[in-house]
Length: 261
Image (tube, rainbow, N blue to C red; front, side, top):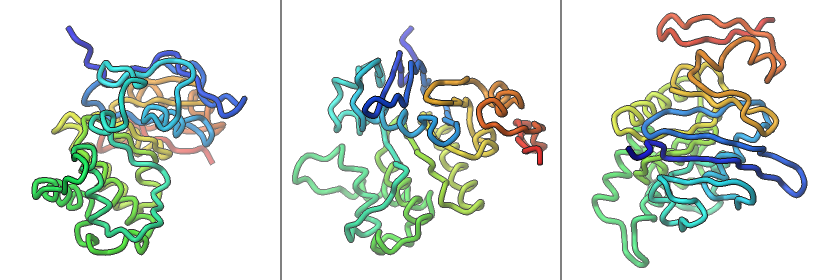
């Protein structure tokens, strides 16, 4: 039976100059699951996501996407399988919001070929999901950080890939938009079997929406598993240096983390 893994990582290590950032990472991401990567600042979360997205060159270890080595995939091939929303969403040029979202269709277009009505419809659907359609004629440079973040997620959704990687997708959003957006991503994950890799800082949002958690510490995988296996008081204290209580959320039954004050 063929593997249901869409991403396989084997013995991945990465350094900036001589400073190790990732050390001996071995992970498998299965099709149609929602994964959240957690860990303190500087633990390697964003570097791991960027390496999967081929933004950093692999010097040691292997990554495959849908059974094909990352090294052999062209940027266009990879972009047809993996959409990425980066942590830094700043854009300096005066593109309209709709133009930015339509860039998600670029991996499917030949040179000098314009977007079709079908491409526009996909963009509109993504913008309605992220509540950005009303911003379509605005310049991307005129938006707030939270609005721009929702636009970049709309662009990733418009790319229509089987895997979507989101680096801190809710960091600039208020609690209403955080929950609304994660609900939409979760629904897309369940209904369309899109594999989600998200970097989040909020342990409780991660527990509420994720199938599996990957907890990183000092460039290594400290542990991974379902939320109940990862969010335990001794594990959190060892990684974050904070004593916590863990209770069951009354609405979901998922673990809920309360710091000891």
